[in-house]
Image (tube, helix red, strand yellow):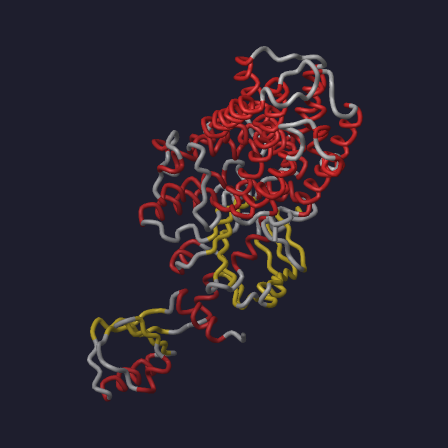
Length: 302
Length: 254
């Protein structure tokens, strides 16, 4: 039995300005114990898909299960199996950190949960903030509380919707160590993120969404191997020759261009020399997930 | 079992929410009611005779108590829901296994507590004007509880429906306030011209106030059994609507 199963999930939003097909026949399974990445540009439908999983949004078509429980018909069991860390930094200003966690435990019928709450607080570096009011916490601290709130009922499936957006490096490290440990202990993790290096480092398998459809679904290693490109990276202040400018990705001074093999690298360098482009910090490396992502997003049929 | 203790947690959370700011949610409405009593009581004391042997101030007290119960029961569920919707923290509740029955019981239960605590507060302060008569106290309990439950449910509906604070304020100012003020809090409807008397009899709030007052004086404009029937049916209708909205995820789950 898969931990999470999406079957032909579609969602159409009907608004005053017409209809929007946010999801269009999304199907894939996440196996028990996987660390799974869901990637895609803004507006691809990632948050809609996760919201359907959590019961916050209802699918127009299709079926979603968590640990075999249908998220609509058997919502209570499905939600008990799921811990979701929302993208928005939300909190209840009336309560302290410990109160918020006790209340959240209570919603799941857990009355005496303080041992686990203490463990969560310690693991997320929140122990000294237990009695602070939610309003007094910094953004990063609030984010940690959101993670703790999602885990109070020890759900077998953990969903993190862009948990590291706007979070400092230290918290990112703490968070990933903790989530990776939970994953090793058997929890299934579904992660959406904009930081592709995080997905590359953490996720065993990845699905990419574009305009509401799955455009790639494979092991991370297979996705990286599938595009056996060599990447040429350098910095320059000069204008690129037209032929190169079309195929290169330019971020400020940094230029990246894909090359199939050594011969093509030579051709590229020759073109640069002929064009009189002065380059610095030349690197030749393997394509990373970001390159794969961009290739799929620009190449996939709309 | 989870359902029961889950609902219990939500109920306690909702009670804590207003209790932590009791100065604003309990003390302030008590003060408002006492102001009404001082001013209206002073101005109208010698001019209005409602029931024989009952002074105007004594007549006014149960009406003000009930008005406070109703307004605060409404305010509790409606403001809690809209705050959670606007700040986004309702998501913590939406991801839980709690059923629509649990939501309903917890929100309305906490509203009743707030309404009744304020009502008891108003009554306690007005003892200073003379001890209340408690001719048929069971009616006080029945109408107090039913009225609070009905307005707690109405607040739930308004809180689900409203997307902005001003929509909620409109509901409060254009529905709840007129119905409360035109229900006979400040006068006996018998003193009204017959057209307005007839209109008052279409207002369920009139029966809540009249039945509640019956408990104090043993006298009322209409039979307490008629009032009980009207209030019970109105409550059943409002509660059914609130439960249906919750079950369908109206404005909660897109």
